[in-house]
Image 1 (spheres, rainbow, N blue to C red):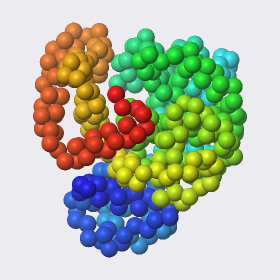
Image 2 (spheres, rainbow, N blue to C red):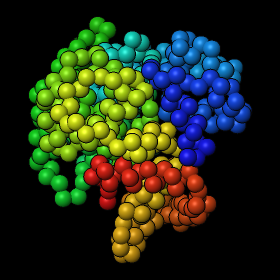
Image 3 (cartoon, rainbow, N blue to C red):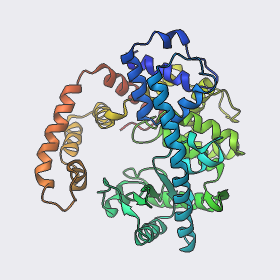
Image 4 (cartoon, one colour):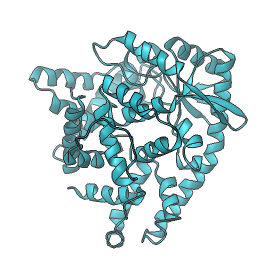
Length: 410
């Protein structure tokens, strides 16, 4: 286990509900090691949860005062942001209703106000809404007409997003610039898939959506059973497994405890779409850190311990090296030399909008062209520097093991 892995284990115990953080191990940490823990917490927006823990079961943990202060500031900032997020969600939901567009709010928008005891415990980087493809385009246009603007890194053309992504380029709403992602599906497209099946899946999700109060308004959300499966898919079956961070363990336990789950339907649908393995792995992590929940799982075999350990390590993987880790994982999974070359060329010569994003210039600017060689040199140097890095190598090995078991390897 790497040093980062050991520190990640301590941080997971600090976030847990049924495991005790080793007070002696915490007291023995150096200033540099506490800095690593602080950086991991910052990468995954864990300050509100950690501040909450320090007010209760972690009141006597020997956490440096500087970190306590930082996490308290994070809690206050999250508390202040909650109202702006709520107002933005109510406003855009009302716009969708006026336009006659069926939508369902996803993940954090439901969890924050309907599952957590305080919405500040569930920070949101953005608000996700699910609509049909046609309605997502209509709402995107309506939001722009109402004053929403693309974010500073929203260079992705809509036509490209429709083919390669699960949501449209984000729009920022209101004076607080709350980001919205309008989804027309819950997972990214894959080569050779049945796109008609993806359309039908979205139609089914929207047909089952539910309404719930939010302040003075009512908002449409995914059905709780669909929401739980969405949390599983988002955490375990994204472009890189378990890169959403340890908040997902708290999310899952709140989702299970906060609403009635139709467990036979959950497992039937999870098996039908090949996502039952990820659900069992995540529920094993929930049992270890948050306490066992009754899930009605028809399977009796336990998840292999080595995979639980790999998932634990990836819950706090270095978010700053996501691109390098993803590329290294795919290169390792690509068997033939020709396949490796094709993958390398794809990374060296990405679509124009990706280079524009890297350069921080408009996609139609002439400055995109000189940014290509600059980007190549930058990424090449980062790749050379990180070859043989023990932390990156461990994360790639864990990701490959999980992707093979989950059936998502290249």
